Length: 127
Image 1 (cartoon, rainbow, N blue to C red):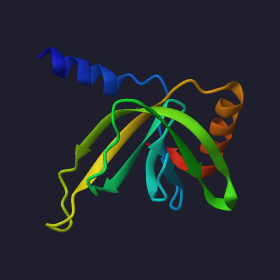
Image 2 (image 1 turned 90 degrees about the horizontal axis):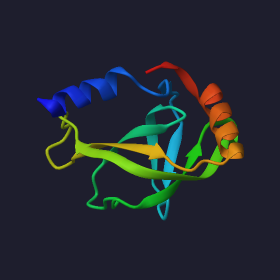
Image 3 (image 1 turned 120 degrees about the horizontal axis):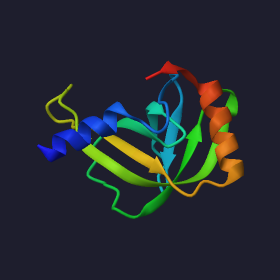
Image 4 (image 1 turned 90 degrees about the vertical axis):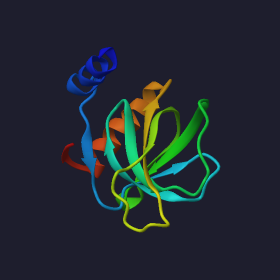
């Protein structure tokens, strides 16, 4: 019961407003060449849906790069994994679609400014 209450509080009261990313706005994880479409993004983190290829992030800290239209980029954003789970929708029996949620950590003032500008230009509205 306590877990349910914590979950409701976490989703009901967000510190940062989430925005729906436009089509063609991607994230590239550290040490990867794969681009994944961003589902939603805020000043505190982002979420993506991706095809599970067996590689998973550990519990440590990593960096990512945001790539938007008009060649707008924000690089070297430190983050940690918050959730990584299989989605209920299975498009094909041999493919697993997962949702990854990450939290940004230790952003510099310049990175926060770049991220704010990125969100203003690369999103369509509230998620």
